[in-house]
Length: 129
Image 1 (cartoon, rainbow, N blue to C red):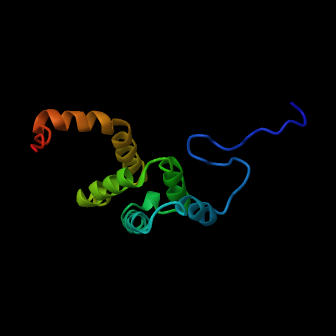
Image 2: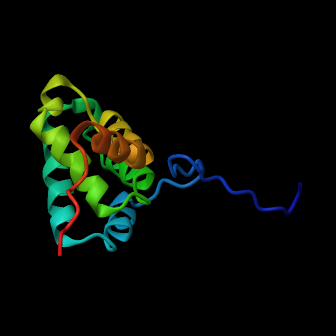
Image 3: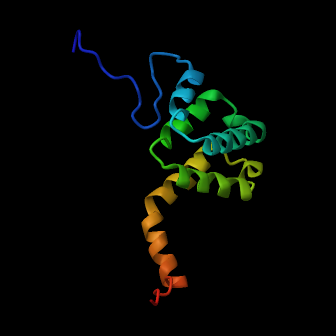
């Protein structure tokens, strides 16, 4: 094992055990691929969490949240942020962990949710020419 470099970064959350890193720089790297609407919504919800959930007020918590949802598309991310905001979950003490669970579960289940909605509501009628 001597001389061998080992990755000290957690694959799940991105925490590096050896380095105290600059989270602002890493946050900007993750957000550079997002569109302006998504960045604004993320910033607004992060501000609400920072003010109302003291345990999640650090930049490191925000970075770990972004690291976990970086593979999620903008549509699903905006949906989750909107649900979190509309439900005012930040006032109930729910922070990034809850928001992450909402977004990731929607991302995993969106095909089945769509299928179930078609069963309940039905599909569009066929076009007649």
